[in-house]
Image (cartoon, rainbow, N blue to C red; front, side, top):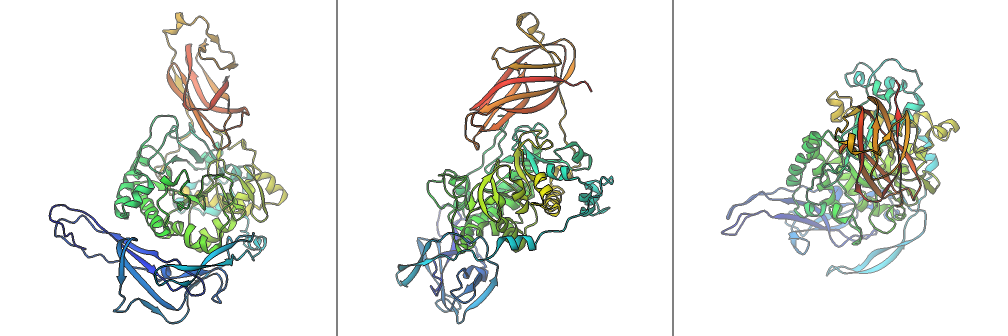
Length: 619
């Protein structure tokens, strides 16, 4: 590459596309198989770029057995032509060893797999047929192959063995990290109640971690903290971090803009800064990059995502993952998978062939796992071929973990629903047994302080009691979480954050100016009033509870800050409750004798405060 200009420095991209023979499977007219960006070139300066194209990018998945090799990636016989340029609209033929292309003389099998994620309903797909000399093809239609494997048998044959429970042996997670004991021995100490608690995240805006973040998980119960399991935290992204208490938000360029640079090196450098930002704010994970394929132009979150192309998407996501890790944080790939439209985005069933899944919708995630080393994934809201992503066994176990070798944590999207991993059917936020069976490790989220008391009303313990879920499956998710926890900054730092007592001083100016102040008893429940003033006779410690509702739908987000004498106390946050009142325990505060003006700063509209309660803590 040479900058032939005389005045300006600049960069240029090189893109290589493949034209594969149509064969029995049918192929796209052009497929991106490699790209690279030059460094900044001064006028007259040149650079030699070397691009490697793995042979697997020449292959197509045979999901029907048309080549005689079902569920295998194959190269059909014929001439594979390469096209070179700086845009798909400006390409020229690229010879291969002096020939017009790469000649494959016989059918070549690159890899074979199990049938996964195939649809169960009939539909047809387009297949290119005759023509193609000018890039245009006649269209044929063919039936899409449907699921043939028995999911129940697959799951039951691979159930993990249970680890016998030993009770507390005094082992800590740090003992595992330093090699003094095994992970199995540590997990054997955890009761079923502790295991069920461990797979619940709390949020949003937990006061146990950095204020305003999306969730806290890990040591969400005192008994877990005592065993050395810290509280890790996540913050919403993907383009910067967001604090829902209104304290802080940062902004980086959107995913689409970043991908338009065609410069993974630049993107990786940018996200080193993002990793440092996470580290500085005491946050372990960024909930990003978002990397769904831009399939539908009306998808309201397309701007978060990189591209309609899986290779460009995957390489950009891998760069983000590496950059955040270099800066000290952890990236979370989302939304896995096929969340590509706006209408009914949380429940529309993405009905798609196995070939399209593997070659388009999963491929970017595969690159990010294999090339970027991603170790955190968030599943999508929607079903994929009838099974919700949050409880989709083949998605999160067969493909992600077994085929791709993923070693990390998988979490649901916030307030996700799950259905039966075998039979599908109706979905519920309570069906965490299905989530655990699919090896989706962590439910996000239950209300703050709700993990230990099962505030979400999930069915984990009930399913264990009936045999619908095995102890080994629950322990498997716990091990995934704990292995991951040892990679977080909060664990490496040795810190054990937990909710402390918030100490507040009275306002002397209120003494004579607030004649209507309400005297606080041992338990005082107060209806919301914009002029609410509290009177405390003696210094004491109180638990703060609040009842709120939001008329929005379940995935709506609302929030407000509770203030006493204009000092921040806690963030009240909930998803939409359809008008149903819910009670939350916010925090523990120490109030000195005197008067306190109560204030609410509504930072996300839609939240209604019904009452505020203070309960005296005697111990």
